[in-house]
Length: 94
Image: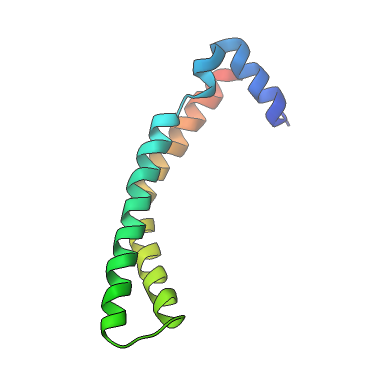
């Protein structure tokens, strides 16, 4: 098994600094969409629950669970693409 330090060294030898950032934009696109799909529904649903008279901490738990499910459902396909991209790049280095 190869260590993270050894992998970093191989990547740097073959691709220099740009190789260390391969996959950065796929990660950035997944995370920006994922966080947007989490925090916006969390805030909106949390305010809705507060208007319904549900107090903390139950409001926080319910809103977080709802937002987490929505975020996971949206970002899971993007995560598959990101992971496969990382595997393809990783296989080209070995």
